Image (tube, rainbow, N blue to C red; front, side, top):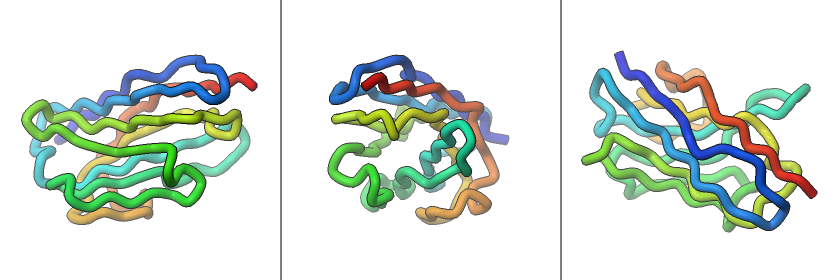
Length: 123
């Protein structure tokens, strides 16, 4: 059973940056894809980014492409989401998810989820 814990969220002004971390423990992490999803108040959960087990394949939602970068350090069992040029519409709870055999934009493909970290962007 893989446990995931996100960190790095906070309050930032529009145009600013944050770096989220997703730390894994309790199971095999380095051989699975990891996804980042977010959910804003009153909205459905949406896909943000995903990275393959090796880090060689990444995929982003159009809304964050060019601003967000996903990476991973398998030696440290950690996946990162670097978020630049943050905008008010990026305000949400960000969750990481693991366990998919390949990169996927579909949340049900990931059996393991963290509780999330709040990102708030003030305009």
